[in-house]
Length: 239
Ligand SMILES: [Zn+2]
Image (tube, rainbow, N blue to C red; front, top):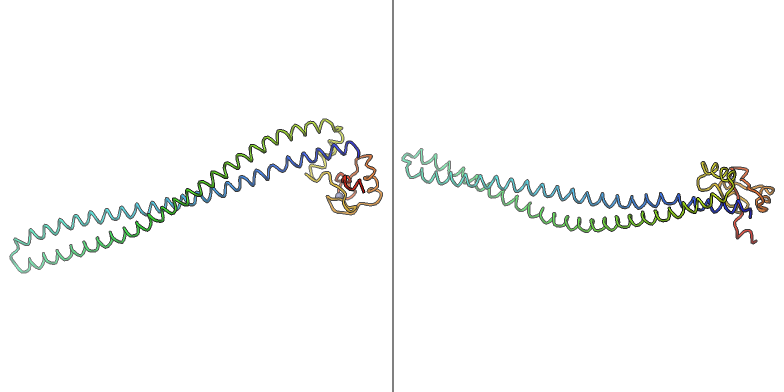
């Protein structure tokens, strides 16, 4: 095979490897991002549950203060009842007492109801905490993987860029320029094999004359349809 072509194929392989890094990095970052989102959603639900418990506790506190006040009121009523003389006064105090007792019953019921909700929320919070802990573990593991992917890729990049530099040096400038020009639009299919006498870039059939020229491989031949550089794969050389 034409030595320029051999070098170009080598360079094209290096370029393909370099270009494959970005999707790998993106895939790793995406996975981390999804896991982090999941974790922050669990954290948000925990905050919401804590807020609810706090609100409940505040309400319970209010009812407890009310109970204290009502207790005082009842004591006052008892004291007053010793000094009342008329039926009207007795009745009025009795009514006052009933109202205070009714309010106490209501406050006690509310405290019970709120505490029951708080207990349920506390169980939920514990479950969320467990979920959070296990999500956090998986985020940490993924972050670790991502870091390793980045490190591996950085190492490979350094190697590949130095191989690329070497490869570029061994290619004639005009041929390199020609390749770079095709690569601008064809990206990683700037150089393609011929399979079943068709260009593997545009998949159109190659005429016999061009096909024969590519097989001879004395110079760089491009596809007459799309302009990509063509070559015959080694295993086909043997046939
Ligand atoms: Zn083509």
